[in-house]
Amino acid sequence: MTLHEFVHEHNADLGEPFAQVMDVLETFAKTIREKVSRNGLIEESGDSGGTNVYGENVQKLDAYADKTLTDALLACPAIHAVGSEELETPKTSGNGTGVFTLTHDPVDGSSNIDTNLPIGTIFGLYPKADSILQKGNTQVASGYILYGPSMLLFYAVKGSVNGFTFDPERQTFVLSYENVRVGDKKYYAINEGNWELFFDAEKNYLTTVKNSGDFSGRYIGSMVADIHRTLLKGGIFIYPADKKHENGKLRLLYEVAPLSFLMMQAGGDATSGMTNPLELVPAKHDQRVPIALGSAPLIAQYRSFSPKG
Ligand code: P6P
Image (tube, rainbow, N blue to C red; front, side):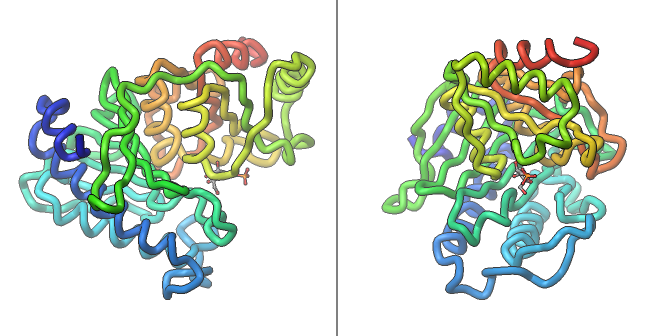
């Protein structure tokens, strides 16, 4: 079953506008797959020499992907507004027909593209509202595209997560992971290079994890790839607050909320400090928050080390 067929059969409650958005995402994914597979040979390779609104280095692919996806969404009748990690302010379509706002991180982990590591696109879909600063639990859908050895698209709606693999012969995504539930393996994913920055809660937690002999460490440094492994195999992904990143590094609106919503629909859990990240109203579009997400028992164990836990 193709993605298009699946959406029409299983998400009819979200209507034709939802199917239109998923079609835009599939077309975008095919475009980026083309670029990623020829990195180093094309104009969109390497560093743009510019910086984004946060003063971070922008890869040419970041800028290309952001413009490509944002423009395609603004031309979609279903879209009222688009928020992008790369844009200072959201853009509205002005089409009068839009019923959704989509937030996206067009290329997450782009610093890994030059080493041929997996990178991803993250998206969250909300009912049309006056502001994009909405709680993550108002999302009607969220998901990611993973550009790896195969290209995957996973998305969640309330109560279910399904995954699709891109078939180059058919030039479309085909259902490959139905009704995904978070795995039960014990992988932990955290950048241990930040050990000296960690607060005692993380140091005590990691010491317990290592002494248990039950866990394996895995860290790719591309959030979509780390989250995808955590979803399929199980485990915990952590980007905590630390002495240098007082609110963590990852952005609530563009990374944390969509991936937490997806993990929870697969039976997993997520915590930002001691708070459910989906209950947080972003104070600003690029608000960063600490995050741990993964299988519920491992999140509960991590929470128990929090000073307030
Ligand atoms: P660090 C990539 O730059 C990213 O935004 C996420 O994809 C990833 O999880 C994180 O940052 C990695 O950050 O500090 O461990 O390199």
